[in-house]
Amino acid sequence: MSARFERLLHGLIGLDAESVGQVVIERAVRQRIAALSCGDEDTYWLKVQGSASEQQALVEAVVVPETWFFRYPESFVALVSLARERCVQLAGARPLRILSLPCSTGEEPYSIAMALLDAGVPGDGFRIDAMDISEVNLQRAERALYGRNSFRGDDLSFRDRHFSETPEGFELRTEVRRKVRLLAGNLLAPGLLAGEAPYDFVFCRNLLIYFDRPTQHAVASVLQRLMRNDGAMFIGPAEASLFSQIGMQALSIPLAFVFRRQAARPVQSPAPSLQVPAKPAPRTAPLPRSAARVPAAVIRTPPAAPAPAAVVADSALEEIAALANAGRSDEARAACERYLAAHGPDAQVFYWLGLLSDVAGRRSEAQAYYRKTLYLAPTHAEALAHLSALLAAGGDLAGAKRLQQRAGRGVSRDER
Image (cartoon, rainbow, N blue to C red; front, side, top):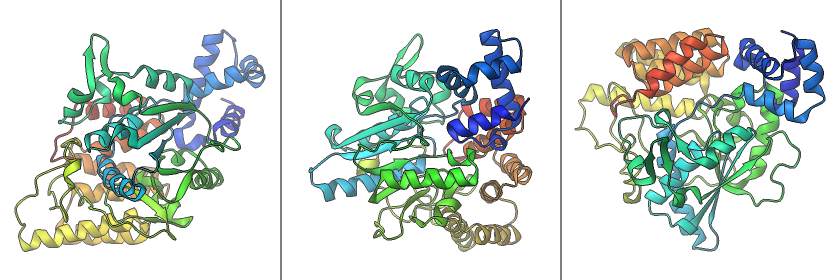
């Protein structure tokens, strides 16, 4: 398959071909050749060069959404806390402004809306803009009808509150849907959202990992422009290092992956403690009462006081989380090695090592650590998701699908 399609996609959406694997792009091109009955690659190349609609169709064939409601659940607990503080500061002067991009098929922005509504934030107290480059994804988000794969975990009480079951699937109720404005857009487009006021909270997770370094920095600059100076940005775990390098500061909220500009005064907020699949750590502070209706996968009764050895282990795990969240990868890796030497194999430590290897671009090493995680905790949700993405990028689509099916069968609270 010619490299010209890789260059085209890089120009259109900033895609780094290595991040998804050449086989993914080849499959997308073959699909479009078959759909148009072009016959061969050269004929299709002439077609796609001169057709904006076909360029969009090729993008659609490459962009395959993989998301679910309340993914990275700790981030929604953090959002609730930060949003309540911001509402107090605003005192009703204006609604909170929240941006989710890429919003894929809508699970993330609708999760934001459900979390805030369940936490008691009034419906007129916030507004969510959700953007994606894929018109197909936006159509599905507008329809707001979801199958079982969009609901993962063993507590789905939010589905009972906010969805109606139909023969075709679970349909989101109107009061949640109307809180989200769906927009088509490309992060690389000049002047993106230039007419909009900056946002209090920006969600952009697991996007920059598909770009080369120059494109990452360009997109990060756009995201900073879209965010208020005192706003907060929620990113993916593998993107923490980049945002630390460009002058952002991680808030001390383990597993939330939320950053602010370093010049902004850090907001003191209740933070859920690191959740370890095999040995849950006690929370350092109670969750606000208003967050009590966020899915129980992230709200747990604190365990009994641990023995002294467990306290030491929990402290070491919290240190690893803090270092990794702050983008201090080398120090976090060293802390992981010290933990394993002192306490033996641990699923969550292997998971952190997998993330750190991902950040460093060592994909085979990352896969090995994710597999170790899953050996100890077979339904570790994030390890399943990250390993699935790596397998797909390497061309092992069957292996990736098997992991996605495992993830879709649900994850227990302890394994969360």
